[in-house]
Each structure stands twice: as C-alpha cells, then as structure tokens.
Amino acid sequence: MPECRARQRISRAAVLGTMLLGLAGCSSAPQPDEASPSTGPRSFLDLVRASSPAKELRFRPVLAVAETPLTDAPPGNPDRQSTDPAAQQRMLASFGCGDPTADPLAGEDDAALPLVTCDRSGGARYLLGPVALDGSAVKSAGLSDAPGNAMFTVKMTFTPDAAAKWADLTTRNVGKQIAIVVGARVLVAPAIMDPIPDGKAEISGLRDQSEAEDLADWLNGH
Image (cartoon, helix red, strand yellow):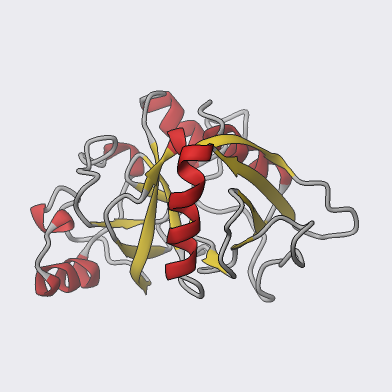
C-alpha cells in the first residue's frame, strides 16, 4: 500500500504555534518496508544502516510528486539528476522504484543537482531540488511530548549557522514540501506550514513511535 503523501507537516515549535497533525484518512497499516524483527530488518532505515551506516541525511525541496510508481525503468538512469526540465518530467513519469538498497545513487547522488527518487515504501516518486541543508545543520532532535494525540511528533533544533538558511528556506516554501532524504530515498516529506525563523521546528503526523524514534536518530546523526 502506498505511503500517504504529504501526511506529515512541519511547523514552528508548539510554544510558538499550534501543533499540526497529519491528514485524515492515511493508513497506519505496516508498509512493505517493514518486516518483523524475527525475519529481518523492520524498516527501511534499518536496511539503510545495514547497507551503509555512513549515508548522509539531506534536506531537499520537493518540486513535483507522482504516485503509483512504475517498476520497469532502470534505477541508474542518468536523467535522474538532469537539469533539463523535459528530461526531469520524463524520468518522474517512468522511474521504477525497486529495491532501495540496490539504488546506485544511494549515498552517491550529487548534492548540487536535482534528484528523481522514491519514498522509502516505493509508494510515490519525487522530483527534488538541489540539497538545501545536510544533516550537519541539525543540532539536536527528539520526540515531542504530545499527550492525547494519536500520532507522534519529532522536534528538531538547527545550529546557529544553519538557522538563518532554514528560515530562508521555509519562508520561500510555505505550503510546499521539504524532503528529508537518506540513501537517495525520501524518509518523510512534510509540508511547510509557516516560516520558521528561530531554528526550531516540529515534524508532526508520524504514524508510530518507532518511526518517530528512527527519524530522530537519523536527524541526530545516528
């Protein structure tokens, strides 16, 4: 089952604004990337760790999204990082998601170029812009206390040097999505709800605690 697109949202910390939960109607059923602990890695993040613990976390703006991915296009197609808009659209329309651990661009994508890729479950294809920030921009991350909410929230704080870049990025992209990418795959792509000028943010609408803890671990560089 495809992962629900734009289910997560990113906003200012709860002390500055209302915490926003995910959109209604999104399934919480296990996704194809989740195996039981007794049979293998339980999540895409575990698969990424197993294949290369050093893969870098990156923030890329979302330029376009397509659902119901095809499976017959070679994952190494050079048009995945083309700067030609026509080639980007062709790739977005035809790219096959396949096995995330077999992606030749995993950890090898050029940060200065756009990227066509998939989300971690293979439920959607993304055209992403060049990297705006990398994992070194995050000072700390952790789960936010949100009693009474059915979903989980990750709070993060940016370093002083990155806070200004984050403020500019969120100001220019209110209402759009920002993808958090590891191993050339999209972990989450929350919608930016408002400008975030103080270097603090919350990603809300995460479906379960283990997903939220994994995301916080990656944001912390684990």
